[in-house]
Amino acid sequence: MRLQGKVAVITGSAGGIGKSIAETFASEGANIVISDINAEAALKTAEEIKTKYNVETMSAVCDVAKLEECETLIKAALDKFSKIDILTNNAGITKDNLVLTMTEAQWDAVIAVNLKGVFNCIKAVSKSMLKARQGRIINIASVAGQMGNAGQINYSATKGGVIAMTKTCAREFASRNILVNAIAPGFIRTAMTDKLTEEKKKVISSTIPLARLGEVSDIAKAALFFASDDSSYITGHVLAVNGGMYM
Ligand SMILES: NC(=O)c1ccc[n+]([C@@H]2O[C@H](COP(=O)([O-])OP(=O)(O)OC[C@H]3O[C@@H](n4cnc5c(N)ncnc54)[C@H](O)[C@@H]3O)[C@@H](O)[C@H]2O)c1
Image 1: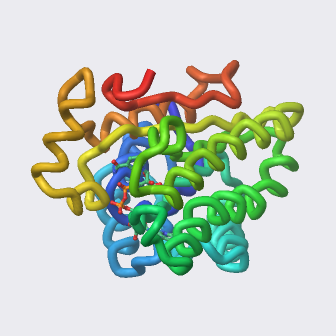
Image 2: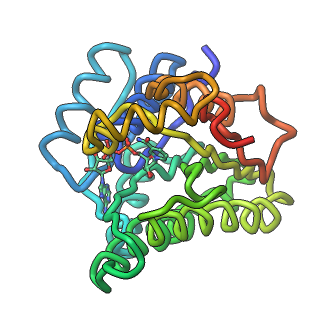
């Protein structure tokens, strides 16, 4: 049990990659805070994990784009568990379009959730982690933030920003033993990529040396590494989990 007794908050964890991270942490003994904008799904996931892994869980509705809601989430988690050991910033959205046709609303929406949302949650959790003189922050970036992606100027900008924030926070928090790392997934099979046509998935697979999309568990295993003692001398790192798509 690598996370026995730890408390982990995971944003956007009602489904997809976030849920898989929550399950993996719970399977290693962590108590879990499921937070999402989808209240019903968050509650269901929290109950499912509690029963399956015999850990304590709670669910909270939180739109990461709103600082006040992030502060409320962190307060609720601290009220229940008295500490937060691990924050995983996973919530993210896409609103793809070419530069020429992207609307201001599409740009603003993705920046608010993927970029400001990460800042909001880190800011909200920082006080308690700094006081505790320990913590782990894991940010879910993307291969699009490393190599760019046509049709995703908003998304790739946020994920590049997440990588920059990861390094800044790693430097800022290192003296208090708070380690901050990022995972940059390639294309992973979730609701987000279900939106792609089969044709597009085939084209993408042809650009991946391992010749397939990844699974949510591939990302969850990387997150477990960053949450556990196995990575205690690593901070400010960006771990590519992309089947070799970008090296
Ligand atoms: N799936 C991929 O191929 C892929 C690749 C690279 C990076 N990522 C990143 O991984 C993360 C998870 O993606 P996923 O594929 O599991 O997506 P998903 O759409 O399956 O799940 C995202 C979850 O976030 C929640 N969410 C959306 N907006 C939110 C908000 N404002 N506040 C809180 N929660 C919100 C959704 O309700 C959902 O439960 C995202 O940051 C995404 O950018 C995914």
